[in-house]
Length: 222
Image (cartoon, rainbow, N blue to C red; front, side):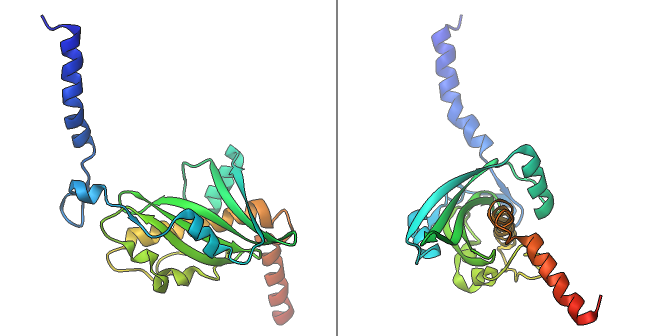
């Protein structure tokens, strides 16, 4: 008869094997399962603290707020960006000088090919991307999204831009999933800042759209 202790010991001995099987990840491009080294790959480019200093270099003070999304607001944001996400809250760093907002920075974790990558998206006080900095990359390939010659193309983008491959974002060969992931994260940050900070201050996308409409109406007389 197997004792209760024996059952526990068997369960403990079998646990690593079952976990290892559950963690096996198939890579369609490589046509094989990823090795343990590839699955645990993590390249740190900079700390969150250093990234914030880069994003908001001239701010006299930097404070952190937490955006908590209601289900209604979450659904609205998902509709605006065109994809669903599991997060229900986001931390926003706000840089201020003389009681005026200099800009915002939001940490994003979005899935690249198999695992999430962590990066910062900076937005100025008018709703344009000021900078994007990769913090941690956890895939075996695709870390070129952290190079400035790539992510500089996000700078100046607003919620009115598509921020999509083949439209206004140039892809990186062999890193398509990482590019899509970062582009999606940048778009989400722009919409979050627009909804929670710019619109309430009368400086959001709705105001920009009205200005653009008025500008073109004055030209074409519509």
